[in-house]
Image (cartoon, rainbow, N blue to C red; front, top):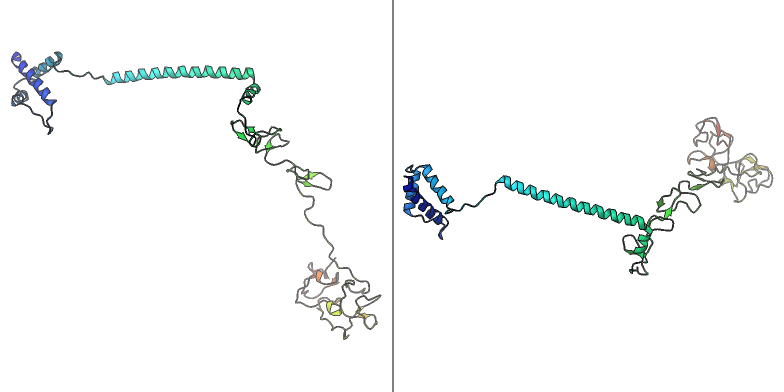
Length: 311
């Protein structure tokens, strides 16, 4: 049975494989009817799987059907591992050569010295232009030196006592360091000013001795009775303001044609101070250390001890 069917199967497979590789313009296979019939015998179990399989094996073994060899996944992985191992070996070799090169270079720099290395750089034929005569470590030319004589780099030209380079000078025009900028009267420098406030100025007006019972500013300027807050006061001496026109020893007398009697606030019985308003301060009047009674509308007695404008 096998001998009968094998030639038929072989022929049909060859034809089938050949025809399967040929596609017409419409993309359809053209398979003869007798080949379909043989395939139908196998599909209908008229021939066994074993017979059909032996026929295929015969075609492959006789190399009538060539099956391309496929590498297994294990073979592909093994090949990649081998290639990776080779690359790692080459990388280690390059790293070793690089380390040897660095060792040789460092050894030569140490032996010859950095200064001689820089001298070699300066001895090159390249020269900076006169407008930018300074060659910096980056190989470019600048109009300022990269380092100053004190060792500070450009941009930080001031060497301070802390051995650090700064952008501003450590000392001010006064000679004091910036941490202690204030010169005191002892000639030393401090971090705070010697005086925090102006010395107090005596604002008490000077009083003319011609008017011993009141305080009236001396001449000049010339004052009239309506420019002061006093009346009926004693006048002695030269009377520079001319308050005692009738020479009776009383200045700015009540009813005098020179000036009307000013209104006096009763809170200040010993002196004549105009009533409120306007509000007056001690600097606006010529009195000090006078008695205060009543409601004190001007507030001359701030500590309420009965004495106004204490000196």
